Image 1 (spheres, rainbow, N blue to C red):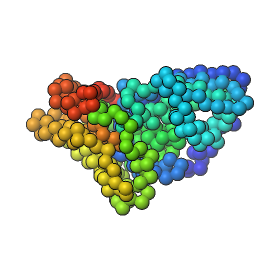
Image 2 (tube, rainbow, N blue to C red):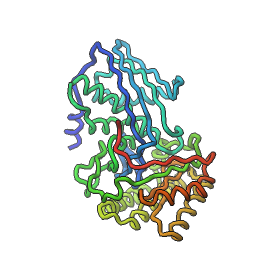
Image 3 (cartoon, rainbow, N blue to C red):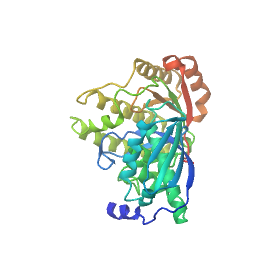
Image 4 (tube, helix red, strand yellow):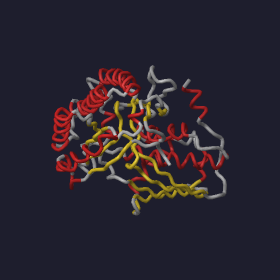
Length: 352
C-alpha cells in the first residue's frame, strides 16, 4: 500500500526557463495526542491528532529562478539567515525523487513568523508546511493541475514530522490508526467527524519562555529510540487517540480535558525519564497548570491546558467561554509569561 502511494507522489516534470514566485502562509498546530518518537524517513512511532491554528503562522515567499547550478538563499524576518540553509538543503535533497524539477531552480526564500522562533510553538511545522505548499504550487504551475494537498502534507512531513498536520484543518490526524479511515504514516488527513463545538475551539498560547529551547525536538525524538518506557508510551498514545476520537464526535468536554492534559504530561514525562534526562518546563509552566486546574474546579468552566515540546502553555477552551478565560489570562496567568506576553489563537483551516 505504501509503495503504491510513494509511486503516486513521484512525477517526471522538469524545470522550465520561466521564473515562478509564490507566497504561502501556513499555520502551526498543537497536538492533542502527541507524536514523540520516529523512524526513518520521518515516520511516526505513534499516531497523533492536532488542532490547526490560525494566528500562529509562518509566511514564506519563494522565488524559483531557472539555473544550471541551483543554490538556496534565505532571509528570515528581513535578514540573511545562512544557518537555516543546511536544513532547507537537506529537505530539498530528501524530496528530490518526488520533485525532480527542483534541480533546475535557484530558491530565493523570504520567511517570517507571527510568533517567536524555537520557543515551543512548532515553527518547524509551519515553516516546512509553507515551503512544501510553495513547491507544490510550482508543480501545479508546471503541470497545469491544482495544488495537491496530500502531496504537500507528504512533502512537509519529510521536512518536519508535525508539518504534515499544518496543511489543512481544523483537526488533522497523522499516523496509521485502525479507527481512522484513510489514515497513513506518510501524510496527515483531515478529521471531518468532530462535534461543532470543536470547529471554533480557542487556544491562548502563554509565552512562558520565548528563547531557543535547551533541547531541540529532533534530539528529543531521537532519545525515544532507547527509552525504557517507549513501547508503553506508544501503546498509550494509540489508546488515547481511540478514546479522543469518540470524544471529538460526541463533544464530551470532561473526557476531552482528561485525555488532553494526560497527553501533555505524558510527553514531558518522557523527557524527564530519558537518558540523558532534560526538563523544558519552567516554574511558570507549573504555576499556570495549577491555576488552570484550580480555576476549572472553582468555576466549572471547561478550560484545560496542553503543552508542546517547550515551556509554553496552550490554554484550550470553547469559544463561548472566551471572555472569562481571557480575563483569567490578563489578570493572573500573564504574570507567569515572559514580558507578560501571550497570543490569542483559534482553530483554523490550514495553509493559504
